[in-house]
Image (cartoon, rainbow, N blue to C red; front, side, top):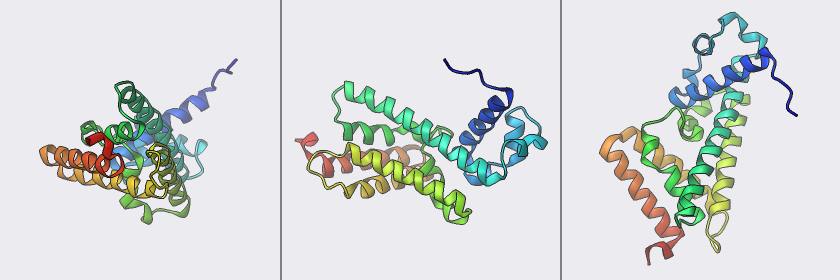
Length: 195
C-alpha cells in the first residue's frame, strides 16, 4: 500500500514538474527560481526548503523530463507497432513526428538542451550526459537485427539534430526536414521498409 504524500513532497513534485516543462520549453535559462515557484503556486522563499541550489532543481527537472519523454515515446511507439511498424520505424516516426515542432514543453529534453549544456555546472552536465546515454540506449534497443550497435550514437545524433533544425526552420520547411530525415534513417537502417 502506498503511503500518502506529505504536503512538502507534493510541493516538491509540483516544483519539479513545472521546472521539467519549463526546461524543455525555454532551456536552462527558462528555469528561474522565482518564476518556477510562482507557477507552482509557492513562494520564492520556500525554494531552499526543497533544493540546496538551482542546479539541484535543474538535475531533478531533467530527470523528470527524461522519464516523461520515455513514457510518451514508449506509448507512441507501442501504438505504431500495433499498426505494423517495426520497433525502429516506430521510434523514428514517434521521435520525428511533426507534433514536436509545436509542443516544445513536452518534447525531448536532450534536443531542448544540447546546445546549452557545455555552459552549465559539472553537476548539470553530468545529468545531461545521462539523458543522452538513455536516448542512445533506447535507439540501440530499437535498431534492426544485423545493424552494428555502435550505430545507435549516429542515429541518436541524427534524431536530435534533425529535431533541433526542424524547430529552427519551423512550418513547412521544418516538417519537410523531419519527413526527409525519417525516410533517410529508414532507408539506411531498415531498407526492407522500402522494398
